[in-house]
Image 1 (cartoon, rainbow, N blue to C red):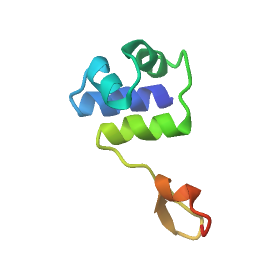
Image 2: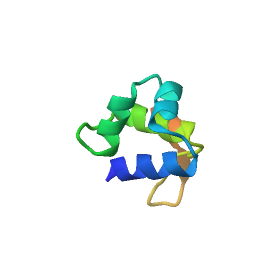
Image 3: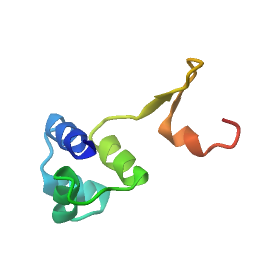
Length: 77
C-alpha cells in the first residue's frame, strides 16, 4: 500500500521517478521498487520521499493530540 501512496504523491507533485530519486538521493530503480512494493522503504525514507513531494506526515493520538512525524523522536512525547 505504501508504494501506491508514494507513487500518487509523486504524480501529484509532477515529478518523474528520476527527479524524485535525485531529490531523495536514491536511484530511480530503488524508487520504482518502492512504488511496486518489490522493496519496502524505511519510515525515514517514506518521510523523505513524501516531504520532497510536498506531503507532511501527521499522527493523531487517541486523546486527539496531533504531532508531526519529526516529533516522534522527541523524548517528551
